[in-house]
Length: 290
Image (cartoon, rainbow, N blue to C red; front, side):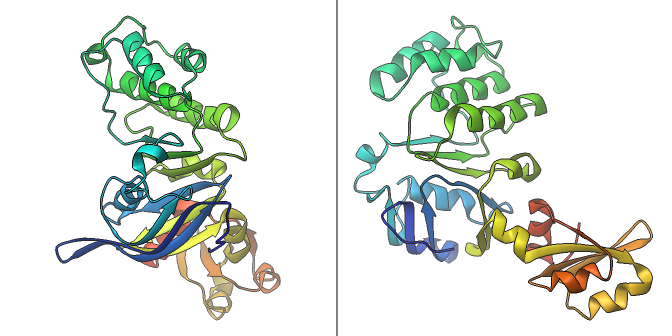
């Protein structure tokens, strides 16, 4: 998906990152327009975090990369006024009290809304006078999220943001992200292994495999392009003749995934279903249905 224009938040051309003989990111090009929520999905070691670190100016790279019109390496200090980042491991100063962390962020970031941070924290059980080292892992991540979501950034990068949190807080976080944070002037890039939990908030999906982009499209495009057919075993050969990407047994019936097939023809063979993002990822990566 390429939509190069002045409204792109990220523009990459030939982005490459090598570690010795390993190409962690392999000559990828893509654009992320403003006002999108992009899910970056890939197996462990596929290159997701390396790509995000390049976007954030945290490591050198080859190729061309612009983030909010700036060079993330040369202009990183200026860029960070408009970018927020949550890594999979919260790195807050363990000796500080929660209130002191809020004091610090308020002093260094002119777009931090302390009242909004307090509103997020009020939904948790985190006491303001407690030191970070006395918080559980889940509380520490909640605190980190509350701070970052209270910063009015143009680009929010989330790398496994809810790792270690229970399902109730994970769902609440993504709900808050849509209701209280996201708008058409903001852009979010998010990676997670809980793909089913974020699919409903995404506008686009970017699949990474072995450092390259396997697929990049809007969810509307994916719904139009990929179809799951469930049919009786007696009609399985007819379905196979239409060239499915994958198939599997399904409670005495057969399920098939098609790319770009004639939906009218498929409908003659059985029931049509939208394929979930995680199921599509497995099909694209392995050629099999989970």
